Amino acid sequence: MKLNRSSGVLLHPTSLPGAYGIGELGASARHFVDWLARAGQRYWQVMPLGPTGYGDSPYQAFSAFAGNPYLVDLDTLRAEGLLQSADFEATPPFDPRKVDFGTQFVWRNQMLDRAYAHFSFGVHPELAAEFGAFKTQEAAWLDDYALFMALKAAHGGLPWNAWEAPLRDREPRALQQARARLSSAIDRVAFGQFLFFRQWRAVREYARARGVQVIGDIPIFVAMDSSDAWAGRDQFYFDDQGQPTVVAGVPPDYFSETGQLWGNPLYNWERMRESGFEWWIERFRGSLKLYDIIRVDHFRGFAGYWEIPFPAETAIQGRWVPALGHEMFEAVGRALGPLPIIAEDLGVITPDVEKLRDDFGFPGMAVLQFAFGGGDFSVNEFLPGNLKENRVVYTGTHDNDTTRGWWVKADESEKHAFRVYTHSDPSEESFAWMLTEIAFGSRAVLAVVPLQDLLNLGSEARMNLPGTTGDHNWTWRLDPEALRPELAQRLRELTERTGRA
Image (cartoon, rainbow, N blue to C red; front, side):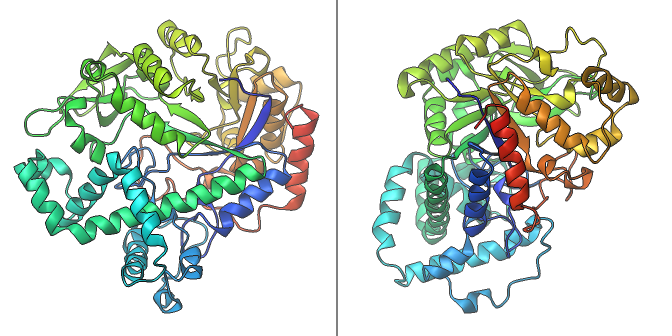
């Protein structure tokens, strides 16, 4: 993939402002796109857009192909007649500063149920043909996903491997009976997906018309409790009871003495090779319907992955196992052409990972918050002067503290290294913008900055703290008054001055 020197902003759509407790794909999304265009930005980077479940992480979705119905813009549905003003009378009071996913799960699903009911009663009959075409076009994943979600609701939210054996094991007669019994619920799930993809397509067309493209994130692994694992069980390592025999994670390192036990099912790469990597071809095909450029999270897992026996309490007792990433990317390239991929190659990266990345020309990542530890300016590849051109440089990511928060909490040795390297002594107030200037001024072909850093926000605006759960993760929302014209102008001037316009 050949990128031109450019820049962008990272903001997940859930963080957009709006009246209904979570960002939506309507006026607020278009307003943000307008602001990006005024600021001279070419890219809007988002996190995975899939439907979230327990823990609310966009990296643990119920499907690798579906969209998150929480993002469906309700005012658009009202304008189209799919919702009535009376449907909004019981709208709960929402905190404009954070997402309450529990309330979204109950109230928003009720609103989408009402929209489906109005549609079923004949409101907007011209949508029927469009909805039918969508179901036909996306049947390869939608049929299983809609059935999965309907069955999950019928089982009180239990994971698929806790369902009765005939459904857990996808016995044809059991599936046929379930489709007949739950036909209305299945169609309702499919309608929610239709609304999401319809609105997201409109947002992308609006952005494209203003010179803004979307960088979208896909996790390398799928969630254990997902339609992908249930419907594609032979693509993973499961026993006869639907329990994984091995799961994903990362080994102990500087950040954790016990490693990280993610619990995702692991791919049976030999089985995938036998099918010509069809699953991956379809996954990337689906991602290209959502994004212009795909950032692959945990890219190193395509070269080798940390395999942990199941069950386990920590990630300590694992082993490295080689993957078939090279063969897979060749197969996907033959089917889809050159892939517009950014490789998330952070952490301890071995030569085989670098070779895989470079053989396909994928740009890697650099994070400036990692640049000033260790003390040796000659070896830290994240230092601005050491960055290669075929890199995407970030001040921080969704898993880091905000840049202002990081500076406040940084070790004195890191602060000293920054002062020595830059011949400066920034204040807490000025540091985030200074790091943004350094990112934009670097050789890296693409510079991306989280919106929180442009707004100079502290740790209260952090998006995620890895290894933790709770309502402090994934819930930050943008103040609607924060996207000021003067900030857009300042960012545009920086973009033009550093040759990224």
